[in-house]
Length: 312
Image (cartoon, rainbow, N blue to C red):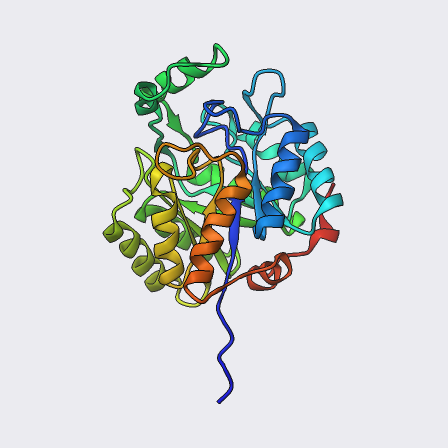
C-alpha cells in the first residue's frame, strides 16, 4: 500500500509588529535592513510567509510609510522566494488611509486585515518592563486602557475594495468569534473570494482567550461557517505561542509565530531571532509527522497571484 502524503503546514512569521511590542527586546528588528535580514532568516528556517510591519529606524515607532515597506520588501524578494504579507493594521493610533497605503501602493501577495473594532489592552505589560529604550513606549502602552483599534464595516469594505484590482489576498485576522461572522458577511457579499485565509488570534486582552476550549470553539465555528472554503491558521500571544501552534497543527491548521506575537523562546528566555521561533515550531510540526509547506506550496494552497505580480 502506498504511503499517504503528509499534510503540509504553512508557517507564517510575523517579524516585528509594532502594535504588540514596542522595542521591549534588544533582538527586535527595527531598521529596514534588520527587518529584511530577519525575514530572510525566518524563510530559511522554514517560514513560507513573512508578515511585515515597519518601524521608524530612528526610534522604533510604528510607521506605515510605504518607502520603508518598499525598501525591505525589495530586499527580501531579491534574496528569497518567501511570500510577503504587509499589515493594514499598522497601529491603533493610525487612521484608515495611513494604514492602507503600503498594501494599496505596493500590491503584495498577501495583506493582513482585522475583522472588527476592538479594545486592544497592552497596558498589563507595564508591570513586566521597566527599562524603556525610547520615551514614546511607556505612554503608548499605558494609553491602551482607553484606546480602540478601529475597523468598522465601512473600513473593512474600503480596504478590501481598494485592493481588489491588486489581486492581493488577505490574512483575515479574527480576534473573537464575532469576527468569523464578519468574515462570512463579506464572503456572502462577494467582496472576498474563497479560500479565506483565517488567522485566529488568541490571548490579546480584548479578544478571545488562549484556553484550549477557546481554540476548539474558534475552529468549530469556522468549520461550520466556511466548510471547505477556508484555510485556518492560529497565533497565540506571548507564552501562548507554541502551545496554541501545537494545537492547530494537531487539529489540521497552520501556524504563525514571530517576534510580533511573542518575544520569548521558552520561559524567561528572549528569542534572539525570528528564525529561532520558526525552528521551534517546525520541530513541533515535524514531530507530528507533518511537513512544513514551502512558499510555492503556500501559494498553491492559498491561490496567491505570485511574486511576479507585486509592485516592488
